[in-house]
Image 1 (spheres, one colour):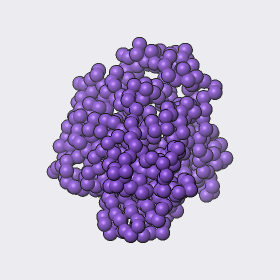
Image 2 (image 1 turned 90 degrees about the vertical axis):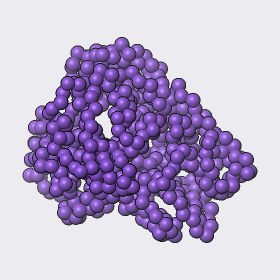
Image 3 (image 1 turned 45 degrees about the vertical axis):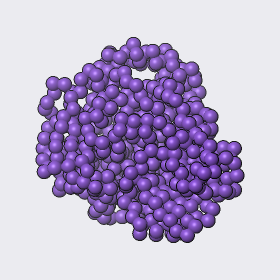
Image 4 (image 1 turned 135 degrees about the horizontal axis):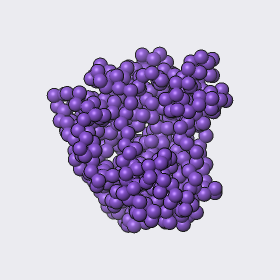
Length: 560
């Protein structure tokens, strides 16, 4: 691992061959082997031990000695840690059996691969790819280009598997197995969900800001403003609001000014030509294409303007403003008039026909409803580009979970980018306890065609200024995307004949035509275009970066 990245991992118990660890790793347990790399200060790592048993919680948590002791002895490890605030994985070794829990959302990923000496797991896929001697997986990339909600059990690297969110990896001397430990909670009374969300999100912020050290936030929309208000309860907060050069009023700027708190320092971040989308900037190598690859020039500068611990509102839209998958639930529960009304209002806002929405709702085609508004397949993708997705259950809860997990997976690469810049980037809305709280509300109570993010506002409206409670839209930077393409057109055209074209995943001539249209201001399928740009830049970054190195443990080093 490189760039000061934090990571952890281990091996299969009872291994008979030479044990290997990443260069610079610290061995924590010898048999079964468990190691860490990088700085795991304070709240990021909690350890416990008993008679012939060990447990560790890696990530952000409040796991104290008593909670660790209960989890160590619990017959069901998943049930024991479920509900803890934070984003974390857990590894427990008992009597020659290793159990590694991936969190329910996927904020702290767990990967594994088979080697000649047994199974090795790690929180970094690129490190395992270097161990296995494999590179990026073309089939995974094909699925990513068509739909960023890629198969949960695969990583972006060949022969490196991912433990799906909410699953456990179990290692014994005889091999490895993966099984689920999490399932969606049953819905209950709406006000109970409101109270539970308030508790869960408050805990998610407290576990990151509760030490009283200064943190920074994105002070913009309702999601990030809520985090700012909660973080200010525990210590100083710097709220950063981005704005185009010369624009000092309107949009997020006006909303930011309405928030006044004793420990809040408001700071503006002026966007100039250097920060346009697609501005040239060296991208560090990550485990998969980052969500912000096209914004890295702006993202890195904005991180530098903040503090070493930064909270973002990423994930809020997925939780509180989802696609209209609730229409299928309304039909299933016989609420046909509400379904017709919601479909009409949703379609009117997006200037589309409600007929396809109602057709999909009556067919209970949740996957189609989830893709509403996404547009047709990008014309530059080749016909053979793979697109093998995990099936989505026929209900809105599964669709919402799937959507948040996809967002968390993409955001994890942004967390790696931030770490390379020396910043701890946190996404409290991606915490499993927050997802649990949201899912306890019925799908048609979580959304509204007339109110903006009703569940979040009902949970925290008393803490927000009146203007935020009445907000109905969020800011958009689509104009800057067209400007960025126009300014960087030669650079972008050069990418059309790059790695993706060599892999046979795109048709360069059609991609070039789409870029020319975007430069002229034509309507553009931005999601698909950003995916292809991010994948191409990522492949170049991975190809140019030195591969993580592994070292064979000597007998002396196998003892912690």
